[in-house]
Length: 329
Image (tube, rainbow, N blue to C red):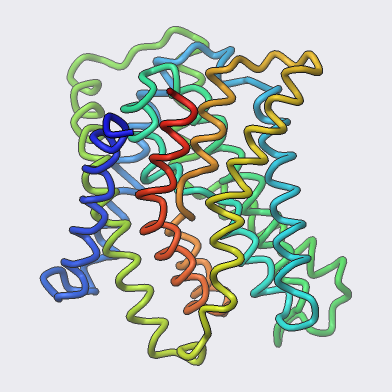
């Protein structure tokens, strides 16, 4: 346990630094989008490209892992909506609540931390998991969030609104540089392509900046989300709608990942213990911080989403270490 905390503490400490910097206005709120853009468009794509290019293509095309992980995501989305909706909230809040319960912070936090804990063996599975969440999980939840309709689509039937939302989600995925970096890295892995030395060193420098800047940015984004949400129409959202989703994220999600992974393994699917460990630890991560940005964009309850992300990030300092100690002990 102490050994795991020794690895994870610096990651959470950098998140705290970013949070305090934004809350104390050492980092202006107007500067946070710039940090986010650097991570999203430069540092993380460089890191993901390098990991993908250095991982055997067979590991990047692990259909057994992809199938089990997406089944876990489908169960998480369904259960979260069933438990939280019940006529009290609309599809927009229910679906984005399901996304924050299902989408772990793999990109900004999980990739560097799981590689630090497990070594390079974690790179391939974590890239598969990140791709699944970016392409499938987020697209499904965004599509479900549009079932309520808005002023422009209220006259359309639900099926038409769903198709329109799926098209928008697909365009968002196609415009995500992290997705393209993984695709290009996979092509490089399959073909044995290597970047010229000077360009490779440039990409390596950007990739090395990804972890500290991304973690600092998570904290700043969380601080901004809580400060902004506290001023909006959802400012008085209660904590009663937060803790069930947070418990689903930190407890149910890793339990489902581990349990279904073991069931699939026993059924004959080619899932190794190492892959199940990566999937379980990924599910034990806190909620992805970018869901707060989606909540703002789609007019959901930003206070609720921001509080879930903040709660899971703080609680994961202990809960993730417990799961990691159990899985690696």
